[in-house]
Image (cartoon, rainbow, N blue to C red; front, side, top):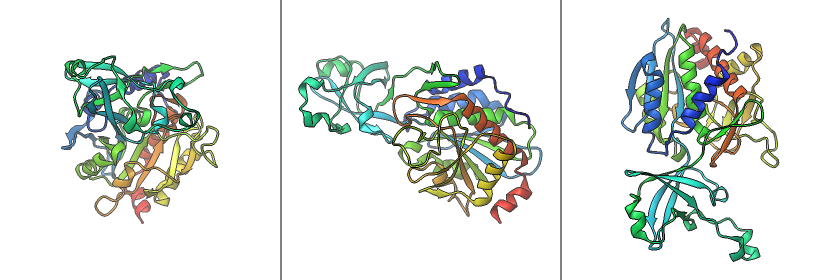
Length: 360
């Protein structure tokens, strides 16, 4: 297969479009609609009852059913209540580190429209030396929408149960091939899935592109989607956190700009050796830059897919994202394009004979 033909302008447009959509866990409908708009005509569209979407495209032969899964949700917040003084209390949706929340802008999505707010940060003037060393618990934080009483906040349409999303614009960085934005975990996976489906028109397999829901709160949507898709093999497309910053890891296995991560292990799944070697050897033979990841924390939708029925060999291929699970992430377009190239190369040769070797 030829090297990636994706133009940088196309990558930027797609990543910007997907990054700026709103998709808190349980509220992924905007993302699902965009997936259907972009690739729905390539195959048969189905939805599970929790909001997940899949597009199934048959191949040229009776090859294995390959699931390309990417979760549509992003780490977000939800309105818990409103104080008498007009401040909004919230609960986290997904794995936030409380340290990164204060002073950031957010958007509260109401039936009346978007209400901008700021997560309150205590001025240092009011903190003791000991307090400055502590991380405030999320249950003690509030969102300020500029009101001074509860009635004003209610009039804005804010009520318990509404999603709250980081207010972040997609930005082209000054460094070559770097972009920043929100929700790269996992909109970069969604973007990969869309591009793979667009590129592969003459392949031996049945491809199933699936946008799953509620991954950030426990891989819930993958449980229903894998029942609907009934795959033979699952390729989980992700935006895993980089570990190329000081103090992150003993071994750097997810540096930005060094190619896709091919995951061998995390606490929720051990990749079948034959499937892992297929991706690794393909990357080597095609001279695609790549990184081998053995993760001692975290997990993905693969935790669920590989346990479906009598087993679905699964692997995680990820575009490393700096500052994942915060308001703003940074990634490399080169990593994005190399990841797509790697998955496409594997799919083109993953026929029934190779599948039999993987499960032997």
